[in-house]
Amino acid sequence: MFDRPDGADDAVLVSLDFGDSDYADSLEELHRLAESAGVSAVAVVEGKRSRPDAALYAGSGKVGEIADALLQSGAGLVIFNHEISAAQQRNLERRLQTRVVDRTTLILDIFAQRARSHEGKLQVELAQLEHLATRLVRGWTHLERQKGGIGLRGPGETQLETDRRLLGKRVKVLKDKLERLKRQHQVQRRARVRGKVLSVSLVGYTNAGKSTLFNRLTHANAYAADKLFATLDTTSRRLYLGETGEVVLSDTVGFIKNLPHTLVAAFRATLTEAVEADLLLHIVDAASPNREQQIDEVNAVLDEIGANAPQIMVFNKIDVKALPPGLERDEYGRITRIHVSALTGAGMELIREALREFGGALQITNSKDKAAITESVSLL
View 1: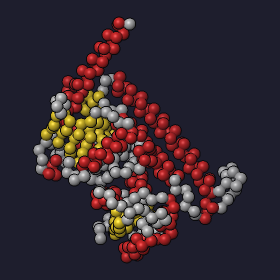
View 2 (view 1 turned 135 degrees about the vertical axis):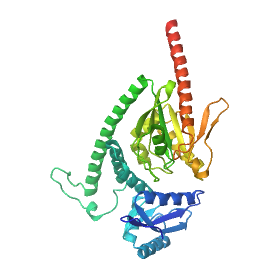
View 3 (view 1 turned 90 degrees about the vertical axis):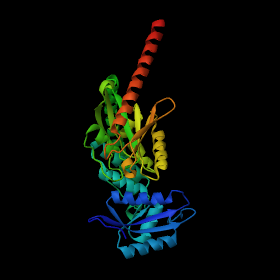
């Protein structure tokens, strides 16, 4: 039995082991996701399977265990640590007589709770609607009847078709609005390029400490909490580095294993800061036993969105293991890893040193490129 925050939904968590090596980590992450969504896990049902059941995902016997857990705990929600199909969701809800959601829906709900900016809310709504579009096959009786509709539905159009058409119209409106915001961001970025301002984005797994680090470096007050997806909206601040000049530092949304593709697509406008950055500071939770897998997950999403800028790995939370701050260089003398604590401030000057070095090297490269272009033009 787990602690129940007042006012939180009570839920039964369901996690099936299909032989994955990171099963235990995935279950722990589900607990964190539920907590971040304001849900209290009052029971956990686990099991092993070779593959999902076509109709119920978990199989009849395991669904019986879930029903018993619901009865004993009084919970009104079941959360699967997997992505289940619309038909499986419908079958489970009929059998269990309660609401059933999957991992993707849970993450979307967290995003809906956390979005603060106008753009962030648009992105979340778009992701939710695109996910819902795959679920409009639930077989409710009102969706199966044909209805006329003055000024709304065409002849013989079913309620399901109407829902799909109206949903499609709303998706188009949201995409148009986000496209306009994207063009505004591009204008702002071009202005930064003209001003020769170095662009640096913080990326990393959710809850790695990006926002705390961002606040420590820029003296900003971006929201930071020990929760998954505490930050959704990109925040940018200028950081002065002495003779090297200024950099624009951007805090971005954290990544997670199996991040829903609808969210990756919807948040491309936000993640453009990472795509077009001159440098990525890849923040890693140094205290996490799963840090290598988390690094791989982040790099997979960065590859998906086309963020190919140079990276410096920043291993955060060294205070948890009482490790000293420090930095590592490659065979060419370039800084590749920095060990810091955003919570205590240890190692912050090392990050500034790395930014100054990178900015200085970039200025030299740009000067050489400019000189080469000028020389080639003069020869024409």
